[in-house]
Length: 377
Image (cartoon, rainbow, N blue to C red; front, side, top):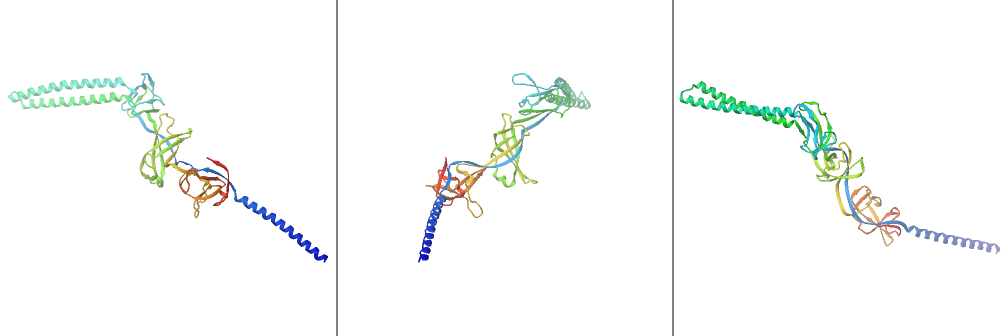
């Protein structure tokens, strides 16, 4: 009997201990399970914004136009100066801003002026000679008709008149040439621009065709970039562009596509695109390396979110996000649009004002309870 009571006592004690332990464990497991179902998250209200689809390219800045000003006549450069707006004279040097038609140099002006005066004198002499020859021709013909002059004398008078006419024409041609040479002896700028190079100094002799200065129009500059063939149809004349250069790292210059070359480069299968931009402050210099961003598409007032909040999107998994309604997470499949850096457009699946989970979404499942620990507006 004593042995039986002892066995019953120990069995009862073991059962009580087991039941107590199991109840505590079950309670703890239930409590842990309840706690795991509530996930702390950060949310942000969905808003609309503008977004752009861009293409990143590089190129070199060039002057809009570059003209090598050369002499059309030989001689000595007697002046390499220009007249400023206030009437003062300024030496023609690199960096000088000039206007179209503004004097740059003068070559043996007195010599070419004297040549013109001599040519004019020859014209006057030719006119007198022609008038005299024509009078003589008229007189001889009259005598010939009256029978008082021979046919030979008549022919001689006609020939003399024609020769005088030819000599006058030659004199007039020489006078025109002298006028051209006199005009060409004053060298003027063919365009508005900046003197970027001086090739000769005042006082030197120069030949026809020798360079004097180089003038570049840099108030407008251009950049030519190569665009891959498969992207060429995304670009049109007028496509906006943004330009950055190392010299002004924080500044963005606005520009537009000016022209698109009609043929592809057969070696690289790229198309040349020319971009032009105003440079009134002359900050951009020919030869600068430029980073070009072409804005091929832009949308305003559309839903835009950060790329890192979008889950899924693999081959067999559609992209989705989580939104919170009444402290419950809801899975929402979305359609994506334009991507710009770390931002992306949502074309379907989200609307403005919804609470979008931006942190903690990797621990969620559909309809899971959440606790909002931070809300961004």
